[in-house]
Image 1 (cartoon, rainbow, N blue to C red):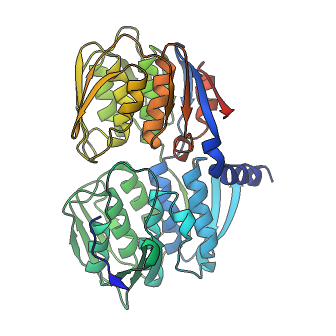
Image 2: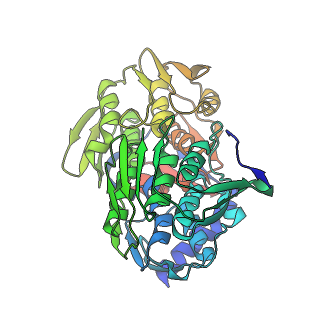
Image 3: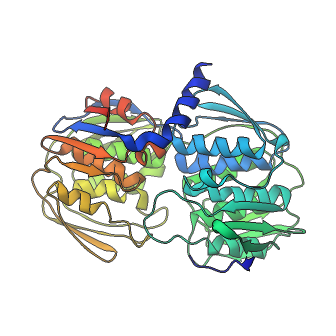
Length: 445
């Protein structure tokens, strides 16, 4: 073993159908007839990035928990399968509510194949370490857009007193005789490291302070869930989070926040198609960086208490965007907004400030006629009047959403392959788009 030091009934049927179909999504594709103006209302599901952190957090409880507003996506199905294989009892109350009893968890090793199918599987390291003092979790999979090392996660675990080793097949093993609170400074803002350190420290003795912490809405949602169970976490949503360890966590009923990125995606779809769409079940403050850019591009934005209406009647205007950690423009909206820039008047640029290789989707856009040049972490778009339909691939989750937007505005019929990526994070996307008037269907290859 080498030391780790590297940088890099009805509802039951619904869940079963999703979980058993994930592996064959590569044999299916989306077919979209472009040129249809979207109109109507769409309801946003629970946040993917929140639920994949909250489900592992249930392990820390000493009583059953009920989680509501869970999105019907493959990453959720995978997380629930991992919990079951660890020994937890999972009961599906309805398609968007589960009750989890973690008292029967009797394993510390996450299934290899399941871990490799989603990035957020590494949250089980923090949860298992915080509950049992030990964890064995394979290096995670999911979308690839550059090296995403977990060295900051390990830095946090080590600060709390854990030791780590790297086993064969990329398995990470963590162990601690006793975890103690400590101060952890993150060299760069990392959502994953912030979440994992929170999970590992919530039940340890003493105070843990995370400096330069991520501030995303799903960080706040995780803290709220843990506090509902009896944790003492303060400062979530700021760059300093303080966690005073508690001896016990109790059962709770908790509803996941709306998905910021899904909402932004449908807002971008409305603007791209010259549509008029009411995006419901959102927290408008979470969307401010997105609404600001859509407004700059010529869309008309109307904010309500829990909804946003997006209308666009004229041509889109060019603009420049730089992705940044929250509250900056989210990197997870970068590919979607790029489609709008490809048909906007003038020349626009996107500077990627989070990941080093998130422009792979531009090759697919070029197949549709987009004029885009990539130089390092910067892409330049010379807007054209209209994209042309083609057969393209979803190279990752958000790039797949971008291909859907491109298909909606393209002239002709677009086919999108590798849709398993899209369905990792978008619930019922075909049904939701169809209700907005889109001509879209899932077909067998």
